[in-house]
Amino acid sequence: MNTLATSNGHALKTALTEQPSLTLSFYSFGVMLRKADGETVTEYPVDPAQVAATLAAKVTFDTGLLGGNTLLVRQDGVQRTIVEYRPPQIAGLFLEGSEAALRVPLPGLILIRTTAEGKTPQYAVYAVKRRPEAHDTPLFHAPLPNVFSSGAICWGTVPRVDAAALRDSSLAADWTMLLGSGVRRPCRWRQEQA
Image 1 (cartoon, one colour):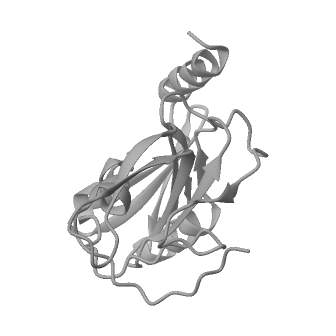
Image 2: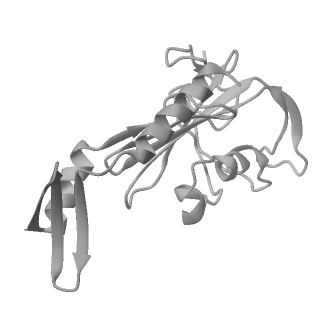
């Protein structure tokens, strides 16, 4: 077992045994905030909208780099970012006007999905030389026909992943939409590579 996974597992175990200092209780008559300070417990009535706005602006959750293909899951208020690695492999790509997939070798890829409550997911994809082990790993333009030099993806008419997949911490459905879908991608894009 690698040290990074052991360290993350220990941190999670410690976090799960900690007792909360603030608790929200939802009743039929309203919402109460319970604050524990040692043996002293105090309750206050609160406006749920104000609590939501406060938490969205200040709460950050970041796993750090993870094992396997999921590199990072970060929750910052209502914004959630998931980063996954796809090792180098042969992929079948469907190009506009073609009935059969073109089989091409692709380098390692990084897919980043950022979602925020009620907004369309934002994606970026990049090529990498190897699985990232640090946040400063160099990123390169992904050699895909529907990817701009910024890393943004032109989805054309490819259907987006469903709400259940967006709640998941895996990008399996997103990778399928990007690389494994037989749906044609009629994008109007300019060649931006040098």
